[in-house]
Image (cartoon, rainbow, N blue to C red; front, side, top):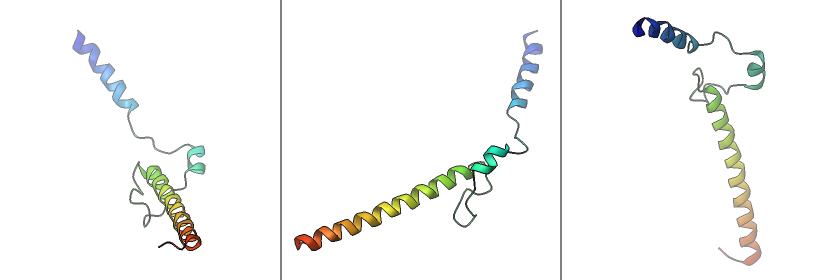
Length: 81
């Protein structure tokens, strides 16, 4: 009897895990995936993560550039190396 009741429960749970055929309109408008050349995860369910990772890397590059400029300015002002 328990096996008979467990089977429909398993089927319902697996049906809830099925892939979604299309993304909601809000998600499509907000998430603009990066091109395949810059996003290694393009075309996968993790594409949004890849896009966010690329944005974070770009921000880190900008921060690094500003830090180098600031260090150079400090070195020039103090006569240091």
